Length: 214
Image (tube, rainbow, N blue to C red):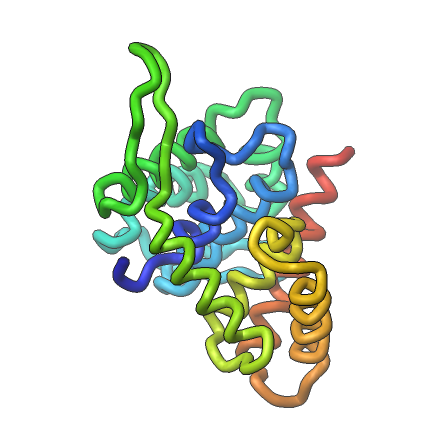
């Protein structure tokens, strides 16, 4: 698979056979939305300032059309904030918005040939991920445990570590190494850009997740 977004990679590593993230796994759903915001920020569509979200432009590049529902939702807010996002995607009584996001991501991945629908019966399908893609992602993430030099993979690793998803792919020793490495990186005087991104994810996570448990 060609270089993919934070959103696609995170979803691939967290989705179940129903092509969704479990409705009880609030932390992972929160991080999926955070991944979408990071992709929009990387594309210079938004800028995140603590809890504030500044809209910079409305043109969505073709490779991010599967995030159209998120971009439109941000544009609909009178004043976009992480609190708005949390209420819409994680704390709402209905799952409409988060389900729409997951559907759009899933369709994008099916079109790329990374996910395949396996019909169980007329009204139900199981979604299977190309194992070679998963193996490639996990291998790339494993290298970062000892040679942390790829900002995008480090951010993905941090999102997975934040939500307890590493247990599905790494041993207890590897998870401990990941936690220690990420903590050292956050406190390092080097790799300032990566450090800022990890701090930003921390702030976003605390701001959004706090609203989901009230």
